[in-house]
Length: 457
Image (cartoon, rainbow, N blue to C red):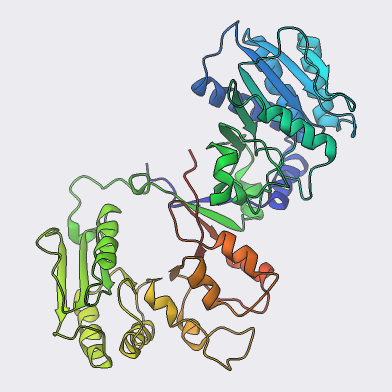
């Protein structure tokens, strides 16, 4: 089976809309969705921790849907034979109806409850000072402001168990921003997080890693129609090429796609060679490197076909006809341009010529090629640079934070988000055109821009 190349990353508001549509249009009440979430959380926890009649599990329960998930999970663990204690942290807000139903079911099943007192903090019954597992069901993805003083104490109490107990966060570590992946101002430092139906953008940003631990995405049965009616603004690129598509038996390399990498210059051939190896790793049948004269990688990697354009140490405008001829002859399925290319005027001429080709294949703009997307001095603020208008929806950019900042016009309110979000790295979440337009209405390039962070499981 071929898995999708992208997985949806809904924003908290989009996730709320999915839940509401499931209930209003598909007769799936929130109580049922919480039950499904608790079952998935149970399966994840059972795969990570040995559960038996001696396992002591302390559940910190908030007042929202996250708390309802925690109450349902507590009941499931109790029915499994574990020793379960729910710490009710709802002194500041009353329980909402769906969560209240699950609390009632948990109490009737025999689950023990205690309260986190406003004064004096956490006071656990005898024998519960050192739990084996802590379940974080305090605050979910809807958190959009700093934690209140009592919530800060509860988060500190959970984190105090980290060295001796396994901490599992439900949907998102409490206190973590679901969009930016930053604590507000502190967050639970979980060993693992199980997030429901789809990942959330903040879970896959670099800063979030020390709070999320391993992230497990589990479906709770939301209708496909509800999700398709409100598509997620962000997407996660699957991190393991092997999960994208398995080669068919008897597949010939000529039918597996051709990648042309344009880049490299004197002393700068490492980056384009790595790009070629990445293309081969992802399953490309034929990979060719188009470069100016320099050390040939063919000796070490004979799979890479190398075409050296003359003996110039740098790219010049004179190379444009040869580049266009090579593209026509090789007929690539996709191109990568920029790694190790340098920022000479000749390199810029080559980049422009490639982007101007009629009917060209998708292009990945990387490294030095991104420099030529930068607006020239005096360019009208709020509009893309001339070269950027040649990009299409099938093209992709892979900037690191500095390159991304250089490409965009000054925007004080937007720049901090860029530095935290648009970074090339391991894991690759992507922002859709809709979300970009929301962030900066005056600048609407028709392509996807990758950010960073690690794999969903």
